[in-house]
Length: 228
Image 1 (spheres, rainbow, N blue to C red):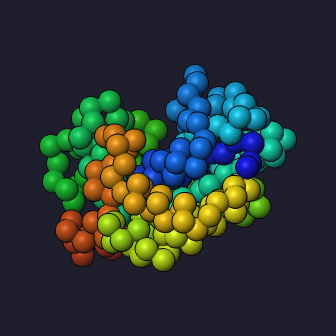
Image 2: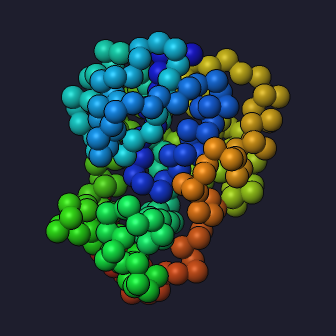
Image 3: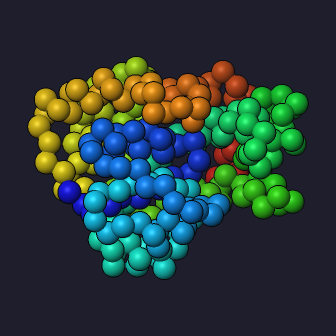
């Protein structure tokens, strides 16, 4: 098994889904003093004992080098960007401690999604394109496995049992975890709506954006992502 593991993502992409899987695989969540992106945790993460933690840290070569020196591997999970901005908007709307909550809490769903797409310079809230572009750079390095929400979520979230099985297998292979097929089969049932999700999972399904996207929002997102 890899010494420890960092779960990387753009917010609302499936961080807690991966963290739940890692706990089922026997890893322990590492809780320590942290800053906005969890950077301090990279410096403090024990080399051994198989700890894991999640972060939305932008790509940075210095962090990558720390991971290499400590023998830490990473899993970068991505998700359909349309579902990301939808989930992100409603998460900020619903939780008063989140940056931007006061600005969008009384807006329409479309205005809330637009806010996520555009970002807000006044509170250092990056546009979604900036977040995605930086996050994708992690995927260029061998110590990072690129997982996808759509493959890992399984049938209950609108995905495929076969793809979920293979994604878990690939993650285990990346982390040097030896596991039997029968054990993976048991985990697919435990992942969906696991109590460990807490408040971090709103619906956890594929295609949730369809109820809220308008032609205007589609054009806005397409324009924002054209250079990413």
